[in-house]
Length: 149
Image (cartoon, rainbow, N blue to C red; front, side, top):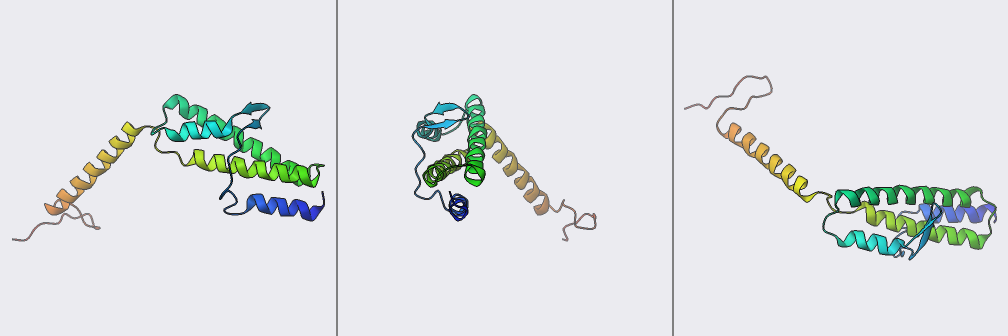
C-alpha cells in the first residue's frame, strides 16, 4: 500500500462522524475470539438497566474492542498490507467504533442508586431553599443574615 493511501484510510477512521450510517459488524474476531458483536450490542441496549454482572461483561467487551481497534489501526499505519486489506481493516474499525459508541451510551446501571442520588440532591436543594427563606443562611463574610421586621 502506498503512503498516501495509508493516510487516507487513517483520516477516514479518525474522521468525526465516521460512524454515521455505519453498521455494527455481525461477527468479528476480537483478541482471537469470534463474537457476535451486533447481537451482543443489541441485546445489551434492549435492557432498561444493566445489572452489575452484565456491567462487568460490557466493560470487558469495551476494553477488548478498544484493544482490537488499536491493533487494527497499527496494521494500517505500519503493516505490510494491500490496499484491499487496508480497506477491510478501516471498515472493521469504523464498525468497532459504532459498537463502542452504542455501548458507551448505555443508561444508568443501577436505577435505584440513580433515584436515591436524585432524591438526596432534591432534599439538599430544598433544605438550602428553606434556610434562605427563613434567613438562616450565611453570606460571603460568614455573618448571619437576619430578617428585618
